[in-house]
Every structure is written in C-alpha cells, then in structure tokens.
Image (cartoon, rainbow, N blue to C red; front, side, top):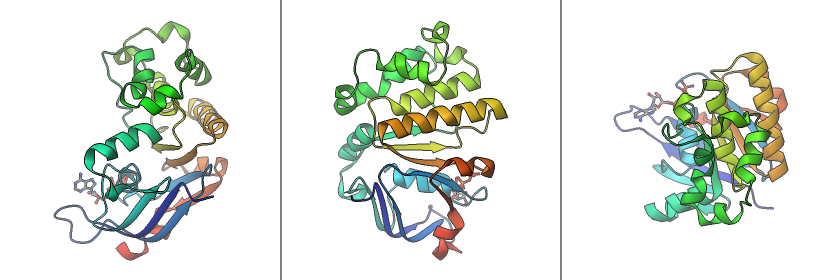
Length: 225
Ligand SMILES: Nc1ncnc2c1ncn2[C@@H]1O[C@H](COP(=O)(O)OP(=O)(O)OP(=O)(O)O)[C@@H](O)[C@H]1O
C-alpha cells in the first residue's frame, strides 16, 4: 500500500530566515500509522504540520499526502483536497465561537461534499459522545465552553466524515493529566476505528508510548542544522 505521507528532498525557509527551517531528505508514514512527533520549541514542528496539510508549500522537494503532491494542485483544489481528506486539531482549537458545539463539529461537511457523504445522520452526536462531551453542552456556543470541552469539540470536528489523515498540534497542552489521558484514549481509538493516519505533535514525551512510532524532528531534519 502506498504511504499516507511521503516527503522527498524537502526544503522550507520562512521569508527573511537565514537558513531553512526544515530540510528533510525522506520521510514516509504508512496508512493507518499513529506517529508521535516531538522536538524543541522553535524546531519547526508546526511548520512541518503546515506542509503536511498543504497550507505551506515547500521551496524545494515534494510533500505528498495520499499520493497527491500538494504543489501540483492549484490553490482552490488544494483547499478542496484538504477539506476532503485532512482533519486538523489546532493548538488553539480554532472553533467558531458563535456557532453551537454541534454546528462546529458539522462544519467540515459544509466545505467538503466527500466528508458530508461519509457522514450519516447522528454521526456528529455520536462523535461528541465518543469524546465525552456532555449532551447539555451540544447546543451551546463554543465560546462558552471550558478549554477541555473545546478540545473535545475540536477532536470531534477533525474526525467527522472520516478523513484519512488527522493532524494534531499540541492538542493536550492545556489539559491536566487525567483529562489528557482520557482525551488521548478517545482520539487514538477513534482514529484507529476509522483506519486513519495520525500525526500528533506534543512536547510531552510521556505520551509517546501510546503511539505506533515516536519521531524526533531533529532526526528527520538533518540538513537544517
Ligand atoms: N509565520 C512565520 N513567519 C516567519 N517565521 C516563522 C513563522 N512561523 C514560524 N516561523 C519560524 O520557524 C521556526 C520554527 O517554528 P515552528 O512554529 O514551526 O516551531 P515548533 O517546533 O512548532 O515550535 P513550538 O513547539 O514552540 O510550537 C521558528 O524559528 C519560527 O520563528
């Protein structure tokens, strides 16, 4: 089976940066694999996630997701491919504050016919139950939720319509240990059930044992030092 992620000869340099932030010769992630990615602050983890999600394009080299080279798509097609195939949990969750919890979870289906097709009635509710968000909160605007609750909504939103790739950027950093462990249980089970590939960035190396593979960005990022 072809890998879910394939990187070759990647160079990425932010404007005005003296040297490339990322220089990765080769990295593959198999379909269905759950990868824990860690590294020091400022090392380029979020930059790499931006490249994996096709939000950033490499200066050199190739980043392919599900066999698709992001750079080969025009901007509009890139947005559509991302909406169809990539679920993303941002560091700050990026929920729409005035929309209800349920509408936030359903949001990707508004931007992706594919994710809508892959969603049955009741899926948003089932995901919220799965991530442990109490039913009383479902009709409330996202702005009224606690950080832990927002995180659960963000995870349900990333998973709706079963995207093949799920990317999480430090989603547990604001949580205490019991909530963090419970969240990880739910996320890993849901991703596994959907057969999705997961790239999970965290500083917290205690979580690494829960994943199929642990990767230090510095090991990949040979050319940038
Ligand atoms: N929008 C941007 N414009 C210019 N430089 C940027 C931008 N975003 C990140 N950088 C630079 O890229 C480098 C890597 O940053 P990045 O956010 O990818 O690291 P990180 O490993 O995710 O850090 P953290 O763990 O603190 O979130 C840093 O030197 C940072 O200053």
